[in-house]
Image (cartoon, rainbow, N blue to C red; front, top):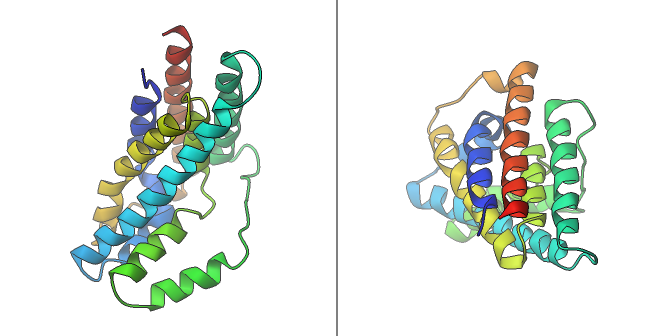
Length: 199
């Protein structure tokens, strides 16, 4: 039973203000036409799904009792939620040349360029993304992790599509909003992992 799916969907919906602040500008830059925006979203979804498969696969091969993967996922979820709330530094995973590739894709025309820009955007450091990847680690396997992150990505799509056409929020800059989002995501994620352990 994929109990991480509701938690991933809740995280994406609750985290919409954060997504607007992080990626709203990228969505707007990709919205030259509806097909361009769809291509950008598809590229980002591909990256999220691939990262989820990797995280789920890693969680599945951790040696020891079956609950070890969920324990690691819980630690990651708590850590990244704390980073989203501003209590600890947000981890950064620098990828050499990523900014240059992103600039090239943004400047190019065509659906392939928009798709590529979405793929690159999906690799940008993001506390909400990292927290949800913690769920993927405890999902139970590579395809469960991939599906968890696909659901997360689909949940972010409506808000980012709205942002692409000028609907923005100013609340994302307020610390109490970030902390409320982090608490809600943490609770949803912990419930999903706990339900998987007892299921």
